[in-house]
Image (cartoon, rainbow, N blue to C red; front, top):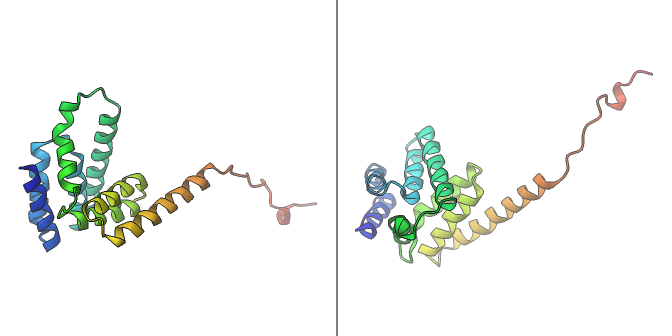
Length: 168
């Protein structure tokens, strides 16, 4: 059932029927409230339909849910439905490859580099021959590494008075 819903979501997304795609994503999320995948796609669909604040809320909720799962003692059985959603949405041949790619680019633009890389990897998992996804992964990874390197560099303080402004 979950596989069929994600296939339908991908089909609507590919055809440009964002209203129906949103309805499917919302239905999946209502059925599986801890599903990070449907939250991310809701964020993408909100953003694509000019609802930026709702998109940012959805991405924030997905981040909180991911952190909650990573830091909890949740039993594997409790995560079964959410894991099945991820497999259905990113498995080889998934109709969501293009949506994952778009999501990855959007998350990159929003400065969410780890999430962008995960989305782009999901696009490539769904379509191993997806050259644009492979290139985007390399670019985002390089950019994120560059940003981390800059952040680790010590910052030098500027002098309080610049030499040209000194009074002798």
